[in-house]
Image 1 (cartoon, rainbow, N blue to C red):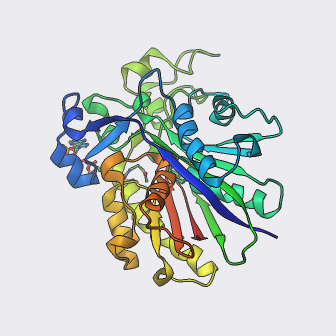
Image 2: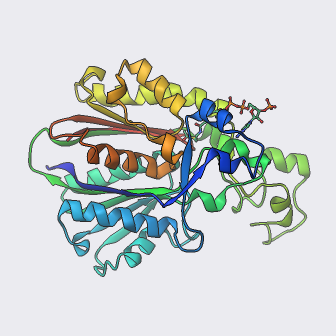
Image 3: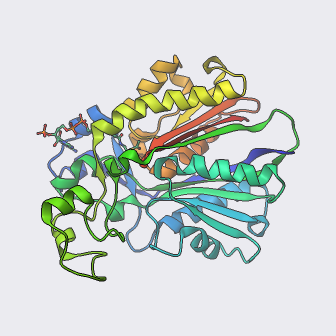
Amino acid sequence: MFSTKIAGIGHYVPERIVTNHELSKFMDTTDEWIQERTGIKERRYGKKHKETTTTMAAEAAQVAIKRAGIDKNDVDFIIFATLSPDYYFPGCGVLLQREMGITNSACGALDIRNQCSGFIYALSIADQFIKTGVYKNILVVGSEMHSMGLDFTTTGRNVTVIFGDGAGAAVLQASSVEGKGILTTKLHADGTHAEMLSFINPGCHGGYYDQELEKFGYPDVEFGGLFITQKMLDDHMTFPYMDGQFVFKLAVQKFPEVILEALNSVGLSKSDINMLIPHQANLRISQFVQRSLGLKDEQVWNNIQKYGNTTAASIPIALSEAWEAGKINEGDLVCLAAFGSGFTWGSAVIRW
Ligand code: ACO
């Protein structure tokens, strides 16, 4: 049995910086409101029609592959986490394979739809394949081009100001050094409140979620034509929805829980953490988690101020940045944790 190590990590964020002030030209919001509630000062938006979730992922992946010291055709499995794919189908995994010119058709490609916890889920799946010797080099990617799917009117302001674009990637390999690499991953899900943080149209449910159907009446069409309707467009129902306070309350409970669960399962405690990389949901959530675990500022990596919430990309971007800044060194205990839509949440404990 091998353990799994992160052999290379990389990230990419688009050049275009969008400040809070710029957003306030499109919707009724202010820099003060956004910073106070979320900590976000600015975010990046990809170049419309030039950049996509896949092209940004390729940029990040090239860096990770180079740092791992392998050739792109050594990649034998791709796991791609995103909630903002280029196409409804096929998934971004195969698009990334094509974009990067990976010609090895023995390389499988899998898409993960676990939103904010997508990268942790992807890491956990990769870990199982590496430990069992099925694959040698797995490319795990989180990438999001949120800016193409947000509501830039005041109706969508509570969601739109939070999200940004970017990508992060890691190459996972077997490690022969005992006690190094991914020590454990923990995954959780509870679909009870699936719509509390959701992007439900278009979808095969044929329109609004149940409460809305009851309110507006079921559309008078027997087959087809319901995937996307004029009414959905008119009602701003083709954008993400979030009950912010509901999400906040659960997030601050689940983050510490899942971090401690992972640490306890490998006989470690919060005092062993060298670097916590939380999913960059909201600076207030990360600060709450930091306080509840009694960690110092230098033990928690925050970059939401610059990039907003990049969902599946946020952990690998933060991990790559922290590593580049020399804040993650050989032997350090790194803890990753996420909570998000689904709800799904998870954590990973890694001995670097
Ligand atoms: N600018 C100005 N005013 C706004 C904005 C905005 N961008 N968005 C909402 N408001 C208004 C609301 O309309 C409301 O006005 P009203 O009182 O007249 O009705 C008022 O501000 C308060 O709205 P709330 O939603 O109650 O604001 P809250 O203080 O809860 O802050 C926020 C909203 C920032 C979303 C908060 O709930 C939060 O951080 N929740 C956590 C959710 C989160 O982090 N999600 C990230 C994605 S999920 C994840 O990654 C885990």
